[in-house]
Length: 526
Image (cartoon, rainbow, N blue to C red; front, side, top):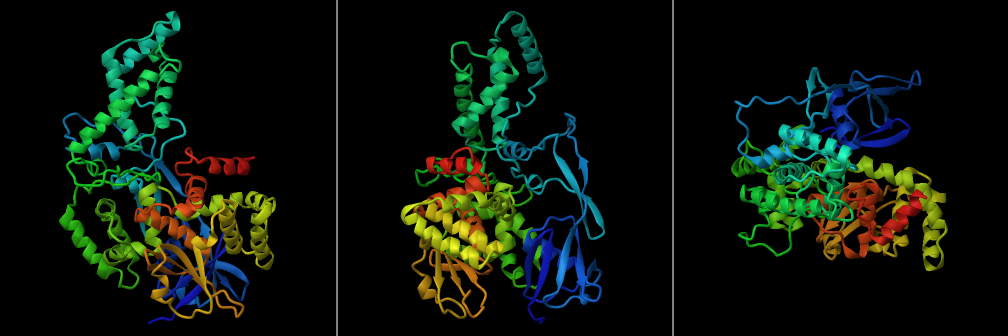
């Protein structure tokens, strides 16, 4: 077996460390795949290596030229884009028998797919989430009113013309019903349980586009549309529940479940998706069992990733409906607790790149946050000073992010030790008995004066599920991903820190902030 190897990877102006536990791969393609998966690099790139004789970078054509601690560089290449436009399907072609799948997986005519070059094949791919019948878009900043049936569009056009000429409003019950039916199906493409603000945005967009639909009896002009859309949405959910839509059927009164409604709490797009049309519970269970062996095979990431994607819906049903303990999930789905798979599962749930999105916004707000930390007074000021001194000792990116994250907890009057515990003078694995009392914790060791590197791990429900993470910020990213992946609620003592991660850094449900979070965000944007 090859010895573990590390490579220095240059990505634009950033330097990253790539750990290869099984040594340098045999081919450039395998190394590119490792760079992509471990460092979260987009598809369109090639690798160059630093030649020590010339002191310059050259194209990497063989991994035989590389050795431990060599430097490689990611060189991005331009992507080629093709716009795919939906066309009307002939009426004599039958459609799917499931209204649920057709609603969730419908593709807008404005969708764009990129040509991705892998190996020797040029393949045109639809959005990976859409191809799996999953939602791929969050609620838009401005809700676009969909096109209505032809006869309804003609009626609305005539109504608008009459309103502009004579100020006469359109009062047509059948048209109102058709409009409501179309709008709730469009809403369901984004979420099954829209908030009042979201429904309000739809109603407002409707009367802005079709002022003939205004209601003179209400101050806003659309109060009746609010009630109408909410009632239609409830009726539509009931219909889909009867058809077996999982994210709705889970709350059926026929199922013996807790009274609390099981629905997305952290802006998940695909909280409880339906099973793929070509799979059933038996075939997906066989894939789960195969995964237990696949993860033990070297250089088998591609096969593992494909099967994890195929089993996503059955895994979500197990997690949401049964709420199994973390220890049981670790036994049944060990691949789920791999760093790469946590990021992929998070992307399937939210359609967002976890690491790049969080780090990008964290770095964007860092200077402003540090300025706020310096302005603190009282007991918080003393705690902040102890943290800020660490920046003088190490100005590296990881340490800077570490200080900013710890400072957030101090800013919110939360205890850093509720999230992070450091074990001094610990060599080898941490003692399981020491971890039993931790419900949710990032544990660290190393990083001492003798030069030993700091290692971070994650403990959930007394079980260490992650180890060997390179920094506290990295552990925070993966911990947040795990809380989405295995459907955990934020701990109350740290609720503001995790709210900041989710709503400010990831921009998920960013329109619904607590007063304390809104105050901080206003300061950051001032």
